[in-house]
Image 1 (tube, rainbow over the protein chains, first blue to last red):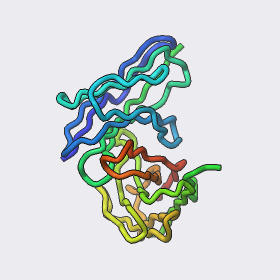
Image 2: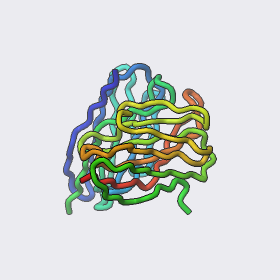
Image 3: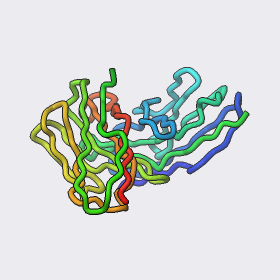
Image 4: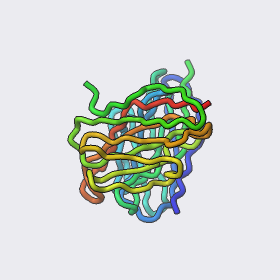
Length: 110
Length: 116
């Protein structure tokens, strides 16, 4: 079966750093996605990790450890506009589908 | 112009009514997906299609049907809507197969459906 866990909610302060964790247990693994979703809007792509290690893209970085079934999304220099839900999704072996976690709602406060 | 469009964007209907949600894409992708999103449950896959002749059930297909009318069009139907189908519905597309790249999915703007 597929199981993806991430915290339901997090709060952080503008200008700070926040780390959103994701653990997964899936039948096969081809890669892990992070998407950002503002309330009522479509998810938008943030990052994709296939190999172990850290991928950095501006203020956002994503880390993967396949042996531990673990990933995190790191957001630096938080801005108010970063208030959104962050979705972890695993591309497993079941065809071409993604399995999504429940999402982490991040609230950035002044 | 949006690459993935959904119509309608909002719909309120009554229990027992038949509803069709439509999705169109101009990305030229072969693969299309329908998801529903409920608070705290993330995105759950309803149906997916890898090409015009290929339709597959996802995690929660009961109560839904789909039609892939063309490469660019994938519609979702609720034959007899019930209140627990109230949710936000997203269509998505992707281009690459497993092991061939990022397999990023591109999402439409969503349809908010309320069944009374």
